[in-house]
Length: 258
Image (cartoon, rainbow, N blue to C red; front, side, top):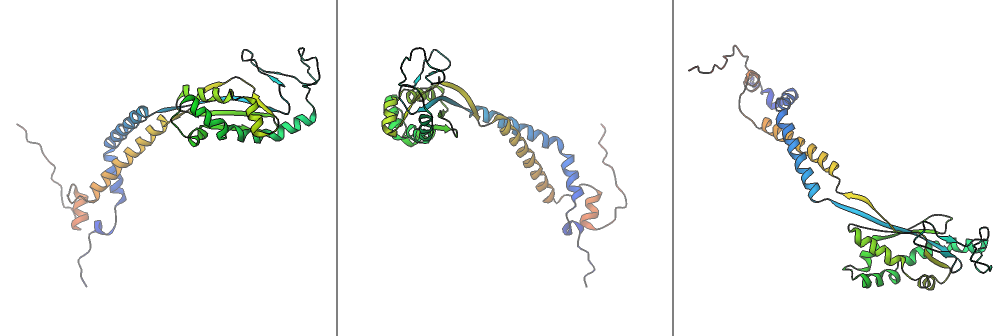
């Protein structure tokens, strides 16, 4: 049997020494993390884009000319049997329960019509957009609510002026064209267009924090690799570890005095 013992450094990894190595170079780790965070901040700021949403409401009714929208007012005028209009002396436009039920059943149909090529392709030609119907359709969304006659049309994009122009063109689509396509009911603009900033991409805060963590992990990883592959004897513990010999004494390093 070979009495020569295998050095303990080749048997096990001394976690305490690894921890001491990391703690000894904490200033380097923090510095690398700060540099990485600064780089992430600058990168995210340089490539940051804003998302805008232009939205407005439309109402689906069973009869034509029930809604009178005045852009100068905050709300439209709706002729309703319980709240008769002073200008409406006849009962032609009175809303019945059957009309409301029919209108609610047509909401999903009109949502599909607004997003169809019948509505969106002419807008591409009018605004001379360099995009396909699929591209424009991806920018437009129509939200419906259960048991409601209201549709919320939204246009999202990175160009504020563009999304507002598209929303205006959708709002200007003749109600008669929508009715002809849906083959029932009536749908028209119900509220004014509102354009707001809805998002920022990428998030500066998230990118900065992530870059700092990546920088710290990279620094720690390089320090550990340097420690694991180092074959230098730096202290008395290395002597005992590599040579498996006790340390009799230590001679301190003395700087030469001139």
